[in-house]
Structures are given as structure tokens and as C-alpha cells.
Length: 281
Image (cartoon, one colour):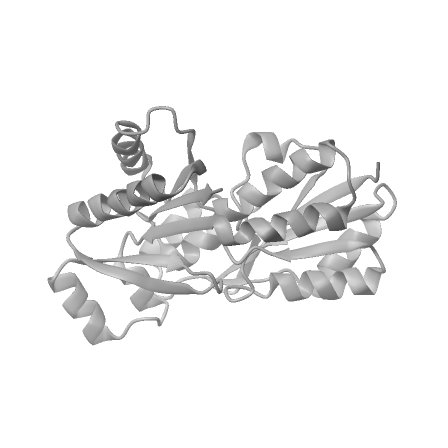
């Protein structure tokens, strides 16, 4: 049985179990604020990030790990592992996949790099399954091929907490921001099958938007066999708990995880955001 390391980046949701797993390595995304660089999950807490977002005129920026960082990591892993599987954020949202591929080539290490075409808990689903498959035996390519086949079954809906984050990040004009605030528009986003973050629906009012996200999830539960689900939130655990209770009222046996989105994701979607991730058979 080959010794396989599992690499991911810090946009993934990393549970305590994964954090303590000896074969899981998380490469931090870099967050840049006022010319200062911070390693996501290492040098900047989510509370500190949200304070920066609230007070600074310009929102922080993120930077993918460099090819050199991945090359150094893979050189190190060669000493203890035969192969590696790297699961990264969608290449439409970050260049981590490209850096990881270049790093493995430079190091000359056998790494299966997987573009999850997802973000946050979507990556976690693949990571957790990959670890289980590795325990059962098989090489990195066999496991990676199965995980790539699962990507099309990953689903998600993202309810933005505030339009201000899009405006400050330059993704919305001043007029759109003003009209959106006046009309209390709550956009529901989705990382689509191409790995792009796109507008799914515009909903009037927070309450209706939450109800719509739950409605869409329940519709998919009726059509497909939902295997697992998670609610990721940006510093609003009470909102996540509310959504969980409403879903479990109809699906009491569904395993539904609650977690916090990483700082590198929060930079772009903002405080107050809630995202629902699930996978179907």
C-alpha cells in the first residue's frame, strides 16, 4: 500500500479531525491588508479579518501560494510519502491549482492535483472521501480518478451577508450598490459546474432569501439521494443554526455539519454570509 499524503489549501473547511490528521497538509492562502501579509488560518484570526473589513476603506486581497511553496512542500513530502493527492479551490477562483501543478513538476514528485471546481466544504467532502479510500488501499491515481468523478455531484448555494463587500471589492458599481440596498436585494450565488461563482437568484429581503435557499435544498433532497450536507457561515452561527433546524424538521436523520468559512473566503464573500454545501449520489 503506497504512503499517500493529502494536500489542500486553506479555502477548504478544515475540521479538528482533519487538522490533527497526520497525512493532511494545509497550504495557507495569503491575505494582504495595508501592505501586510498574513497566512490564512495561521497569522490572522477570523475576528481580526472581520474587523479589518468593517473599518478599512479597501478590503483585503488574497494571493495564492506560490509555485516555490508547493515545490518546497513536495520536496519535503518525498522523504516520507510515495505519492500525494492535492485538492484545491476551483481554478476559476484562484491560481492554486496551477501553482500546485508547477510545484509538483519542479519537485519531481508523484502528485495527483485535483481541481475541485468548488470551494470550502465542497473541497472537504472530497478530502474526507479520499482519506477513507486511502485506508482501503489503492494508489493515488485510482483514488483521484474516483474523486474527480464525484465533483459533478457537489452542490452549493451561497447567500451573501452584505452587498457592501461586493461593492468595496470592485465587483459592483455604486449605482447597483445603492439600488440593491434600497430594495434590500439579497443575492444567492452558486459555484457552478464550471467552477465559476455566479449569480443564481436575486431575492427581496433576508427572510425570503433564507427560505429560498432551504426550499432549493429540499427540492434536491426529493430528487436525489443527498449523502451529506454542511452549512458554512461568516461569523453568524445563529443564522446557521436556524437554517439547520428548519432543514432537520423535514430531514431529522440528515447528517448536517456547521462550520465557519475560512478567512481567505470571507475576504470575498463577507461577514454574515451563509453557504449550504451538499453532495448527491
